[in-house]
Length: 418
Length: 151
Image (cartoon, rainbow over all chains, first blue to last red; front, side, top):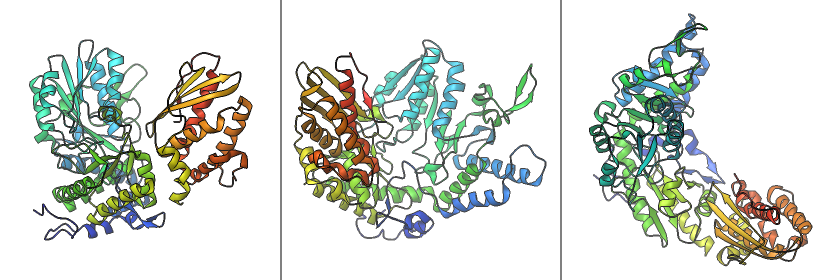
């Protein structure tokens, strides 16, 4: 459908991007006297009014501490918070809310799995296998565990297109591999990894799999039962929700057997100075008062995404990706970094003789917000032998006109530099 | 906020044709600078005569602002002693960070950096070479230095 959509508005499609944009108050603001063109959603997506209102309602009318009081507000807050957990369960099709742990975000989710599961299970001779595409958040927590318990971190290579070399990945698997930790979608390049094949291959070798889903969750339907991942981590703020809230999905039997990570209130059943018994799942992993308004916001974001239909969002973004890829390639000296066959709504690029930081500043003056830098994926930058890239990323509210503004602004960069 | 204030002709020229680019053989002092946020890296090598900079070269990869700033700096400090360089550093720092600062005549071409202060995210790019210079001067005669980072 509409494979050759170019400058004209997408024809007969039910996806009305202008209507979607009206849900996002921030998109009507100006930057440096120009209409904001926000192409940095892979760093953090903007929030629709529906999410802002849900958080606002909670703060205004329903806030109290959860799981504690017998009073009405505490009950309401608990219902809102636990209701949000069930909303997450349905969104990712997990079997049970016991498998949904609220965290501060993807990074904390991965650290939880590393410190609770890996640290208590792994030792010398064991291996953790990651890919060369990973974000620092899916590298450093494993390095820390390796230092703590003496296990080894191995890295499966990628090719020049920015795709994992699947044969090499298979060769890297061995009986020593106890965990594979891989991104579902690369944040720096947009590569969609063949995650189901990775999971199945790892399971065949008896290894568990943690998936860093931070970049996948806003672009693709994620189904825990179909995927069969052991752990899946993501953040709300990439999915049009608030910052400071995220999820670690874990298979129930695994979580059940894992030791608590942090100690405190809410994660206990009874405490004496001699002995403490821990709470049931999922609260065993949620020490302290949680981020209730964040959870409410995440649930509202999931409602919002479902109201648009994630498949509709994905196909809208894909047409923008094709448009941007075609238009950017026509700019002299522009090189797209990451040319995988399957990509999510991310275009990373360099301009010959011009540093990405200069690109970012000039685009910003034109009202175009992109990310420049190493994208917390320094090993990916090293692999492509660039210090940094410029990255434009698209979301449910991005328009073809904005892609046009991106292209025009990049031409302006060329003008400034002569 | 005007792009032309940031990317002045002097800046674009020094970015395109950086002066004193490369490395000195047998330098008296060397230091590495790194700006992890944007990946800028530079290496500075100095030939000293007492506490006077006799010659200076820089090498590295960076954005236009960091390259031009380093290039302009090498021109400005050649032949100057430590006290004069410290004074210049203070003036450049003021120029980069204080809205009301007016470039003094002794800054010469370095005055072209005054547009950077309108772009707070870029101040580190312009100051990286100066911090690296400081590290190199500290190192002169006192053994090895650790790489400088502007983060």
